[in-house]
Amino acid sequence: MSEKKKNVVTKFIDRNSRISLPKEFLTALNWIYSDDANRPKVSEPNKVELSLEIDGDTMVLRRVKPACVFCGKDDDADLNFYRNKYICDYCLEDINNKKVLTDK
Image (cartoon, rainbow, N blue to C red; front, side, top):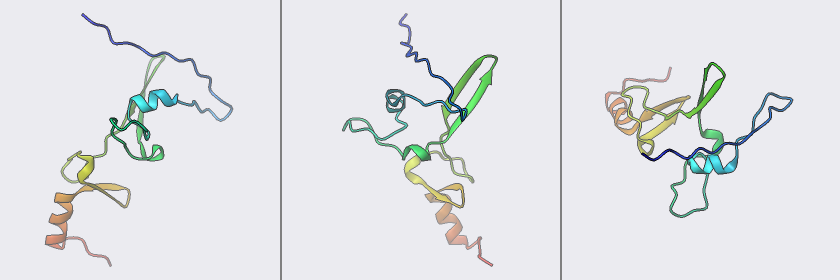
């Protein structure tokens, strides 16, 4: 049985309660742009949404995958960001066809 290799880095919290994440970790997780032609490029770093969980003395950081607010579809290629919500192409087309939303 093979064990997953763990990368461990010690970081200090700065005066503003921040911790910087190593670029190598972010690149390995596809959380930032990469110069490697074989690695898919994702959104800009400031557009990556993260969730933080605390369990005892352990902190877990996960990328939150955006999903359509209506149907839950999470295919990044089909999502549109509108008024702080994600709407997939299918739901957007459905809304436009039904003329459900109106600006007043």
